Length: 160
Image (cartoon, rainbow, N blue to C red; front, side, top):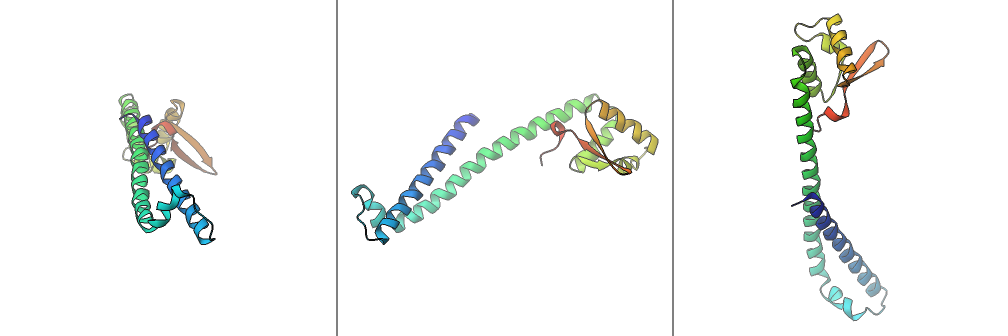
């Protein structure tokens, strides 16, 4: 099913849930003040316990629908991120790939000194590789005093 149809169904279900809650509150408020209740709403007063249990189940069902819609969207974005990373990896040499793997392990952020501690990497080599990755717009370099904080661009950041 298309994501737009799922979202529409989810919105209708949640709206119906909110409408039923509003009706139950309205009927309860009128009955507690001793006012007359319109005949169309009398079943809500007569079977209010049943409706409350039904509303609980309906609330759980609405939550499951909302979760499934959001989860499908997140999964689609994760697939896109993984596709982007795989495409970028094909164009990188071994050192660049190691740095990208390190960044992915560290949730898209690390320091340049951590990169220089990778096997076969020196401070100068780390500086050059990081600068090259920044020129290719794969990472951002943020200076914090003497520390360079390296971040993946948002398009490559892992969403896990």
